[in-house]
Length: 134
Image (cartoon, rainbow, N blue to C red):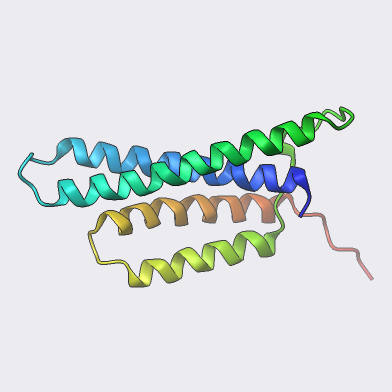
């Protein structure tokens, strides 16, 4: 993959993780303080936050690399990940969903990730280059 592709993938991952953090944090806020899921969700939030930290560091490195190139007006949003890459990631998330305990914080996170990947795949498919006609 190229640096712009890596930057797009990192940005997409950050957005998915931030959305998952938001969903889990909102759920955690509604639980009684003695609910055992409070700890489970807090641990899942901590794991996701760790990924966010790593991705923000990667994004800074990648942003510096693309900033050194001649300007061409392309934004992160203009860079499209290949359909096969999105589909592979989506399939991996679906496999994780099959293993996640029903109603768990991990299952809630996976649901958000799968939804985002499904949306990204739909959009990438819609914008794909038309196939040449014979």
